[in-house]
Length: 375
Image (tube, rainbow, N blue to C red; front, side):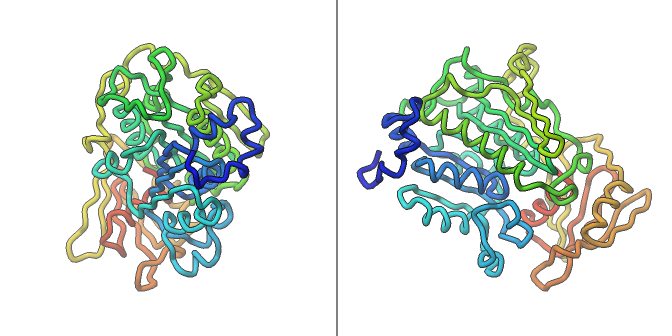
């Protein structure tokens, strides 16, 4: 624990038998990577900062918008008016919450080109994402580097969370003795691809922008994720929740699924066979800037995708004016504006390929695709 850290602020936390002064010291010396600082990520960053996790690295590609404020706790109307990037707004807010925590902000799209660099020095990966493609990238990264990964997702009134300790058999580097979390092979868990071998096809699953999201479900899932992170970083591995938590706060259902045997068949391409397709950039969507058109084309990384265009058009009509033919869906996102104040135009084809007109930036196009179609 650094001399500048005022231990008294953590007094109530240190009263817990599993924390104490030693556990608090471990938290202060730990480094968490938070990828995505929207709904889940902002709650996680807030909680880990208040808990005294010494270093936080935050990666997010988006700016703060008015509709974020209903559930994203680190931001306010001033951030909306200024168009502040979420990572920078989060850093500024966290500095006011706990000045002893070191926060590094990256306003960037997390992808296979920068993943290993952004994860340098991290002891643990926290999932604040909104799409499975990047989650599989995080999973590859966690398995390859031997890092715990705490998955979470929330949409509508439902949410899921799972803590992952990758099996060491496919680890591609020696774990640093100074790392905050250590575990043996018999303490490992299935990875994300063991539990979810394939991501849902684009357009098949609801997103926060098509189905909405209830603020309390975000808080509940993020709290579960944060609790697992605090357990791991403070040295309480035995208390880790190893089940897949699923809850629906509208129907008052809470379920736990035993996923401990999901790895037994050794068919997982990642943690059993050592194929890091997403980390190596061999799998995943492809973005192409269309010369002279101020548009970006996004092509999903999976063959065989088939989108129900009428269903997608019905969902998107809550956000603009869309129509479809058997060959394509096309329309304007009235609440999403480009630099000239014009609505983005979205064209989607049955195989999931899409063209986002109004930007030449792949990151902007990917963000819109993830929000309204789903990667």
